[in-house]
Image 1 (cartoon, protein in one colour):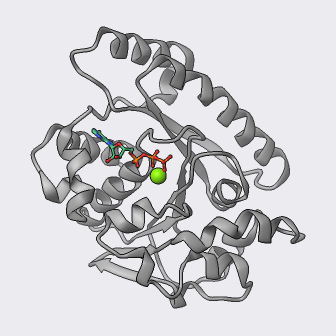
Image 2 (cartoon, rainbow, N blue to C red):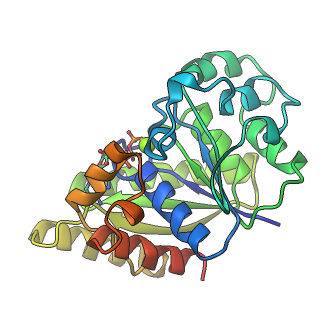
Amino acid sequence: MARTLVIANQKGGVGKSTSVLNLGVALARRGQRVLLIDLDPQAGLTAGLGLDPYTLRRTVYSLLSTPGTSLARVLCTIEDGLALVPANIDLAVADIRLSAAADPATRLRDVLDRSRIPFDVILIDTPPGLGVLTANGLVAADAVIVPVQCQYLAMRGVRGLLDSVERIGQSLNRDLVVGGLFGTLYRVESEHAREVMGELRDVFGPQVFESVIPYDEAAAEAPLAGQAVLDYAPDSPAALAYRALAEEIVP
Ligand SMILES: Nc1ncnc2c1ncn2[C@@H]1O[C@H](COP(=O)(O)OP(=O)(O)OP(=O)(O)O)[C@@H](O)[C@H]1O
Ligand SMILES: [Mg+2]
């Protein structure tokens, strides 16, 4: 059975989508059968893989809004061993449309439970915030992985997220665990960034992965080329860090 990981942090711009994309590519290159799911109406993951969200007919919204839609109908094959359930702006109405439903947060889990397509790892990208889309990701997953930007204020949001994880754990997904946290956008030369990483390790101990993703221009440029930084700049510090992190998350 697939291991399903959701990458979540209610703070925006901390590297969630970049991480899902690059971890997914790194794992696929190691021979894992990987499914990526984009739950963000901004569709950063979808666009980052070189797809044009505006031309997509079926997206993750079809899965969430129309129970019974099969995973196979919305899958896009990216490369050998790497598939994507894409998103587009249609998803922006999901909050309103789903809040009237009896089971708004369990839709994605139901789809994955029904699917017979074999995957080893499923990585779910979530939007900033803790709305119904993020809830769908948390309910569908076995573990939540939290990217934390190496800045002081970013630490604050982590508590709020872990509280939500606990709430969801008590109600909709008893099996959900915190799979780990990792630092992102780490500025090697910054004393402040080092302090934040130190504090993160003090507070969360062994839950913090060894690998830290450095701030790297190549990672910021790669999406413009519709590529993972692993392909855009395979020997860049960010690419090396993502390969090492993938190894830690799925040994
Ligand atoms: N290691 C890095 N070095 C430099 N820039 C990065 C790095 N990781 C991500 N970025 C850039 O930072 C921005 C935010 O990253 P990303 O979109 O992955 O964050 P996010 O958490 O998914 O954001 P949102 O909450 O808006 O979905 C993007 O422009 C991305 O290209
Ligand atoms: Mg994102």
